[in-house]
Image 1: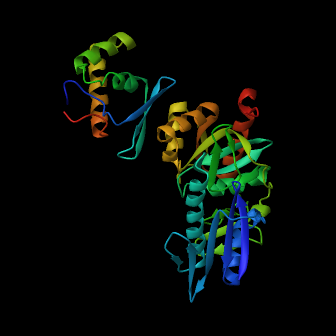
Image 2 (image 1 turned 120 degrees about the vertical axis):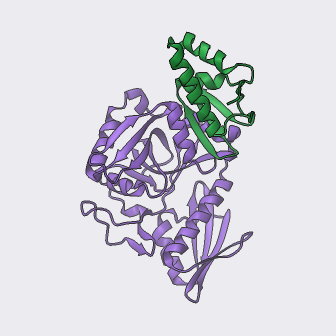
Image 3 (image 1 turned 45 degrees about the vertical axis):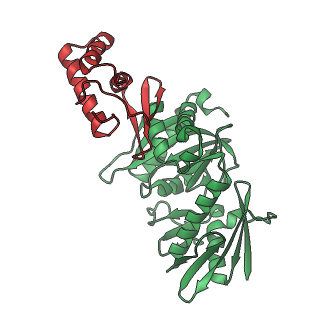
Length: 88
Length: 278
């Protein structure tokens, strides 16, 4: 997994009532992200590290570090599996 | 030579039929759209070449069909694509559409999800028919246009909802003319107030319904959109606009009567502001 995850630049995304709708034209797929995944997606800017994203998640959602790290790892794995991130 | 002139979505389609069988088939499927509509926007010639059916339209290669069912399917697919080109302003959703009063709701689903069967059953409960296949939405007004091709059922519905004697039976399924829908035909365009995304669970004993978020609805609507790329932002903004302005549900279908009752109750329970004419 990339140390500084970055969203693919050709993906279209819209925030709708706290949830992200993500359109991947290349793969002809459209995804809905829940609140947590949306929070993580927003921070996949190529600047934040995975640890920083987890720390921000702790602050925002008041979760324990272990839960935050697991959530970030799971979301990033999912994003990678779906091909939504730039290749490391 | 027989000429059939159809009008739908404010566009005119002229079909020259070289013999009577193709004309009968098209009249059974599209008869409600018949209109002497002036200059044609689309022009077809259809007929039989021995045992096979053919469909000719300028600018494309001739389509050949081995039987009546495939003939109507190919004709339908071609018309649907050409109408999307002729009305790029409309947002075409793969959906059945019914109306109640001046309001419309869509049943959106992938093929073979029972959309037409549920539409057929609902027409027995006073809902008026607007479309079985295409839900063309005007994005400025959120009104949905009629596309009154005959309702097409791939399998016979349950005995509680028998088919009329006039039903056209083809190799690929049955066509019930719009004029024969028990609830009648809706006045269109009508204001879109709700979208039901159908899922069929063959193991399901009871139907269930769940209101979904705008984001989930937008994703589901987008997946059922036929001409998304004709719109700005690849159609994503339009999907969000529609689902923001309407009530959206996932309806897990089961027994038809129970499914219709659940959908009817859901519509009745929509808050007044969501049922209002847009």
